[in-house]
Length: 111
Image 1: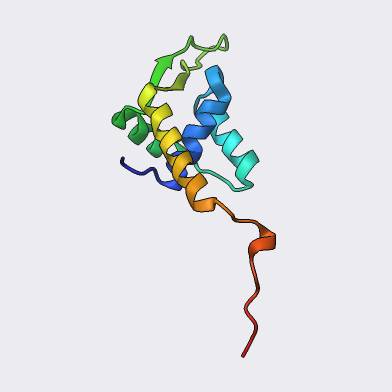
Image 2 (image 1 turned 180 degrees about the vertical axis):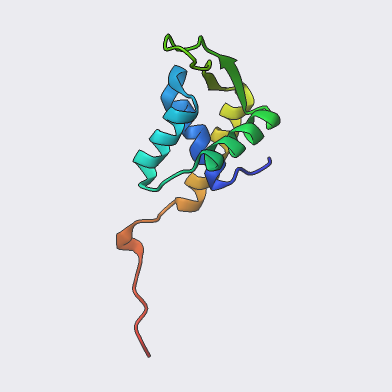
């Protein structure tokens, strides 16, 4: 398995959650809202392109907006490989996070 970067993981999860409304602007807004961090266009577009090249995403071009001069929107969708990649990273994360809770952390005492 080729591991995803955290950025790629967040973008794939966002595309999954947005379903048929996943395009650059909505993906970026969703990431900003959920991570509480600003995401530049490049920070989203470059990984989207990389994920598409790897076969984790596919695109479709929507109709141009009714407003004059608007471009068509490129929508992103998970492929079966993208779903498998998310399932694999979830499995790894679940294993690594097993037993973790704030109560399970003991603070080391100064010697």
